[in-house]
Length: 161
Image (cartoon, helix red, strand yellow):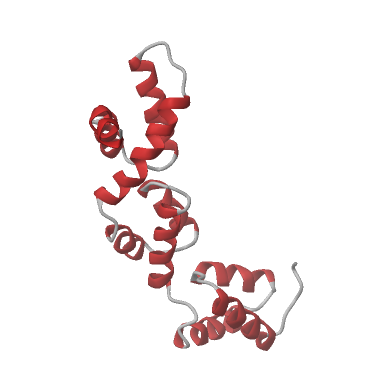
């Protein structure tokens, strides 16, 4: 909805929205632009939201990284790209991503690749590995992590049995 709002209405709506879930500054600025608020009003509202701790990009980035990793099973590259699209600055993105270890990414990636391996048809092991690499790259995992999973696939599958 692109209805015009007064600064007071916008502040109340954004406070309510931010009370229910985490949001970034970029998302709130976009909402205010759609509501046709002038830049001065946007700046004042944003300052109030930050001062009241309704918005905290650091807190948002940490929650976003954990949610996308655990629920969406995304890798670090895809998560970083999504944070960039939401207007989170580079330092904040890297701090949030650095809280996740390679071991945690591998815990997510191994079962994904194991399931994909079972459902993928290929004429050779080389073709299968190529398909698995492309799949994992599309989910945002880095090549070294993917290679580590593929190279040690037998080891992990034996441990699962």
